[in-house]
Image (tube, rainbow, N blue to C red):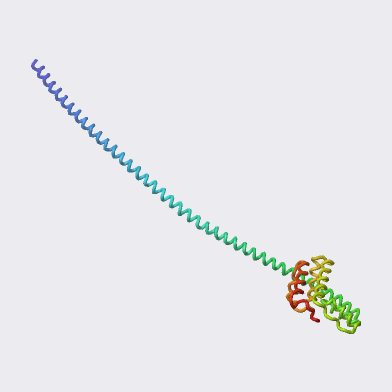
Length: 257
């Protein structure tokens, strides 16, 4: 019995020790749990703070990247558009130069065409004169004994009134009084109008040029008039220049006067 009690007491003491040990274990667990919660809280706060910092850094980085991108795009665009603008400016300048050169070429071509037309007219006049000279040479060969008639024919070029002068001299034994300016003008204008009417305006103008040249050989101060009148391209211009020549002072007077 005593042994049983002793054992029971021992067991009670052991139970008390176990209870005390359990309480200590539970206290240690609570302490450990509290420490773990505190550590977890600290870790969570650190994570939140790190995340905030990371977010701020990322936002700053994005803003910086955006600014750098905008600046890079600006400089890249400028580096591309600058040469393109210079090329466009060069092309525009080249186009203007080409247009100017084209205008000069066109003007030169027109001048050359006018010169060619004038040369053609001169050649035609020369050809016509050659034909007349050939015809007159043939007549000279056929009428070698009638030299007076031949001289009259050449002398009548540019002076169609010579026949009236000669007839007056042969019939009256006196020299024919030179024609007045208005008479010379009317003869020349009538002759020009007859040629324009007979040959048509285009051919009549060219045929009239040689006759105007012959007329000018018998008139004073006619060099400028001859230079202008053989280059016109219309019948009206030929008639107008002829009238103006006779209207000017010192013009329209026969050298024979």
